[in-house]
Length: 99
Image (cartoon, rainbow, N blue to C red):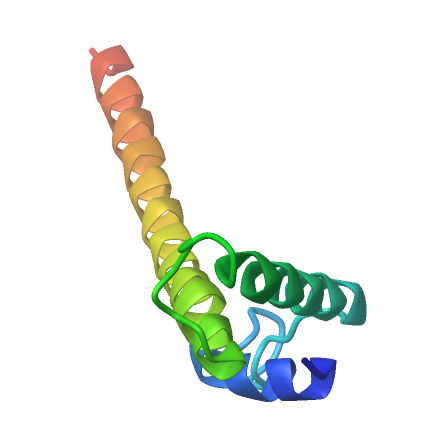
């Protein structure tokens, strides 16, 4: 599958970059790896039932897009939780040292 097509299909799942309002994107080497994965998956799925998802576009969105979307949201939540825990521990430490 063409890497430009893969990039287009993944745009809705990536969301904005942390550095700009532009959508985040994958580098060419990552897109080539996804393309190679799709080729291998399709080839082996013809011999062994590895997945019900057969169309290359669906493989991109279901196998990669949904995972990238979930990772983006889970990582932002974990950073928020970590900052809250850090803030609470700092406040607790300060409060326990005040006479």
